[in-house]
Amino acid sequence: MSKTNGIGKTARWRSTTKAGRFPACAVTSIIGAIVSIGISVRPLAQQSVPAFTSVDQIRRLSAEEAGKGHSVRLRGVVTFHDPGWNLTFVQDEIAGIFVKASDPKVIFEAGQRIELEGVTASGEYAPIVVMSRCNILGTGPLPKPRAVRIDELRTGREDSQLIELSGIIRKASLEDEHPGMEIARAEIRDRVREL
Image (cartoon, rainbow, N blue to C red; front, top):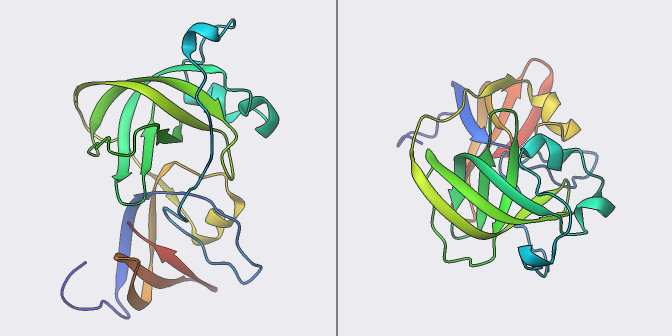
């Protein structure tokens, strides 16, 4: 964010979304709430079914099925990482997903191509991956973000996806050391947090 607060200016954000549970008045978070999940990671050797190899396969699981800790082997691009909040999002050719590192000291950078192993978990909103092992394969471009409207963020369909959002900044603030903005577009007004 620039040194000016940007109030009344039109802005465009590229960020990864993280859906959350919001009241009807809706605070929408473009990388949302702190995720605190107590999950035990089962060793991959104990798994009897083939590993999931695409984010889309994992995202289609019910919360109950994801909670069974199925094996995961994914290749993708890190679209966002915040070590302070232990937030990591990875996107393959089709979709993005939240990845919880079993070691919170693991540091990634957006644009890193990685290959990871882990297990599925139910997460707070949608299925996630609890990573047990990771290899950094190099760097590459981020996937092209999908342009979304503010009202689309409330549906949760864009959870963990790299998106682009346009709107007019109505208020800017610092929330938990991350820029927060109230933005408006057409008849909709919402608060977002860009990390």
